[in-house]
Image (cartoon, rainbow, N blue to C red):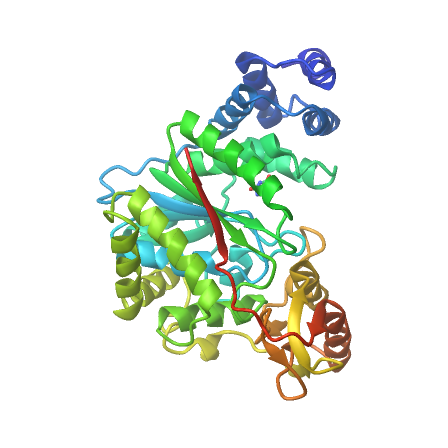
Length: 442
Ligand code: URA
């Protein structure tokens, strides 16, 4: 593609609401990878799509071209279905850390390509980076060896997997064009298709801590993801789950890692976290043909957790990727702990009526546990522990959360923001509704 010629014509066409052919989109994506399409042209294309949208056929073409823009993995003689989960991102979302080893213990293979934290949402890779030595960017040989050894490996996007998405995403991130349904669809699915999956379950989050704050927005995105996945021959279904409050007790990288290990080893179990994890894992086991139906799948999940088989898979994955061999037995030996812990008590005692989950995510970013820019480094130790859920009583003895911080000043500032991010009422707590709001499939 010549930078001045065809790319400009294609952008003009989309800008004016025209339809792009499969060949034109392929050519554009090839130009994104070989550098003949410039950054301003990519930005203009993304903005044109943001305003004009894409038909399903155009979105499918973009997904296909981006999938083929780099290596497409295959898994010969895998000995089980190749399965994965994708989450649109939330606060305290540590589901992948539990789901992947559970699926592996049930006979699936999970080569999970995960992302870093984005804005207020945490990233699975950042959580895994809190384990000293864990290699989140292995070469393909080590990645394959880890999947074969443990049945699961959670790593970052490699340079040769969907490279067109890598460049396009970086430009979208700084041009306010991330939240476009066709661009999100192509971005997510191109990486999943390039990983050579047999089936995918999607966790589309809804609420104050999610990118989709309304059910309608989440449904639109899910319909697009499911239609394009089906067109590409990928078995997929989706659960829309509540992100109106933190998932689980802790937010922050090492804290969430501790919580996930606790769940895997049969320690404390948060009901909402378990409900979401079990539902997504069950969905995936059925999609992958590893369980007859939802009931059998839920029983398999309980068995994998209760028997220690999932914990063992997790330990094998960590070891295969360079982490310590005893992370499951002795997490505190390896996971960082912040020097300051401060109980954030409410101004008045009462019942927690509302939580701004996004604000909580941003408090963790402020503490140093997330990034404002891609190049920022992260403090794995900081975060919010024992975060109360909606309907729970809070008072002087039952704080909203315990702030884990690097300094007393950071902790005080976080406690003030935390009090502002919740509403405390005097109504007794209502029984909590299921966090699984809806299942969608085609
Ligand atoms: N996650 C992705 O991988 N891509 C997007 O566009 C948005 C979220």
